[in-house]
Image 1 (tube, rainbow, N blue to C red):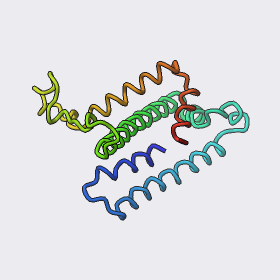
Image 2: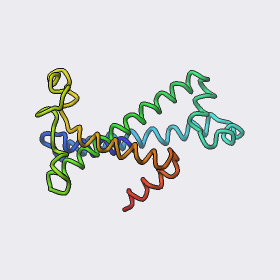
Image 3: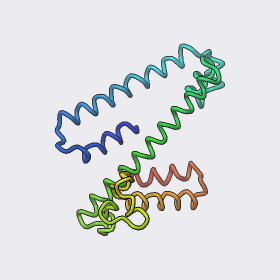
Image 4: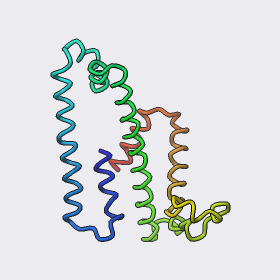
Length: 173
């Protein structure tokens, strides 16, 4: 899913988005997901025995990696999963920044979200403006999103199921 979310965010970053460019991006994402997901499922079915399928029924991919490649394969899979989750978090921050800046431009959020630190960075960042290019965007949006995220995690005490329900309600609403 992260690929689709990232592809949705790329539209605002393109100087001149064209239908052909967007079509190519989505075609690549669909092709990658359409090939890798069935292939992974097929490999699990043909390489794992019925007993192994029962043992690893809740985590087939990690079971496949462990059985076929041992601990090294499992560690590679875990590292890959971590990188995917980092990308998902990055995508959510990019999406929040895009949403907040669009809403602020339309007057639905305060202009505070449109303030760029590149223009008038607070101390001590103003001295290092040229050396800190990652503060060129809209950090007020990212910091507000980070604060909301931390508050949600603390209020729900890190309960993944409760967080999923909150996400589901927000997504459906």
